[in-house]
Length: 319
Ligand code: FO1
Image 1 (spheres, rainbow, N blue to C red):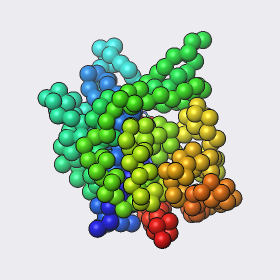
Image 2 (spheres, rainbow, N blue to C red):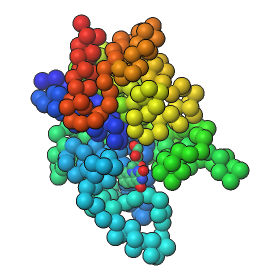
Image 3 (cartoon, rainbow, N blue to C red):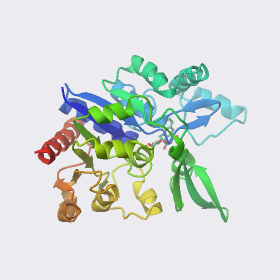
């Protein structure tokens, strides 16, 4: 059985994984999820990227938004607001609240996040093994200028409240340097036949996972094909605001620049969209095998084809 490891962020990663399950229904898929977006709100631990993967693959996602629960209501949030308790800018729905209550209760009882995630997945049966990148606390902070002052804000405040409308001067995965990969992460990488980087944000999603000591090294040393899909199509992010955080780390918002940022020491193959076919030679010059294929995840079949193309490129690299 083919063993595939995927480093996933939120919406883009989750949608890609749905396509991968169609493309490789018999594969043993381990997802290493970003937890740098996690936030404590109302005394609860919220893990947006883990939940987005879990709900998407488990059939509980709000398809239009790409995050949160389907058929959601916001009565708890309204009641909290009536008490003057915020933040009001983060949309936690009633059904979603239940997930955070269970998670926080289990964490309080002493279970590590990896075990809590497995327990939550027992309900959703995502069809993959979902592991947080670490059981330790990591929080991505973004340095911005607000009211004439340089401040570090939580990633969710930058992303959701500020809508990435102010310049990001730095992006820091606070705590990552001290974090240990969660149980099972390094073993899954060492035993993988292929490692995939879905079209997730290269800075705040895949980049944060790679910032946990041991994960980047484990992937580079695994000796198996590592193939990524560009989250940028025609120099713009398909979803989210990757261009804003790429600027913060001095990387141009193009498919080729993101491939070079990962580098040939890590990445063996890179898929760009057909509109970016002109960038294929530049990526190959950087020592990374590159193909241009449609990369818009508009529909299950298109997404499954992207996953097939990624696996085909992995085989080409292996040969
Ligand atoms: N994204 C938003 O744009 N607005 C929200 O109010 C919001 C709430 C939210 C609640 C739970 C959850 O799991 C995700 C949520 N997201 C929201 C998505 C999230 O902020 C980001 O898209 C990811 O963290 C980036 O991967």
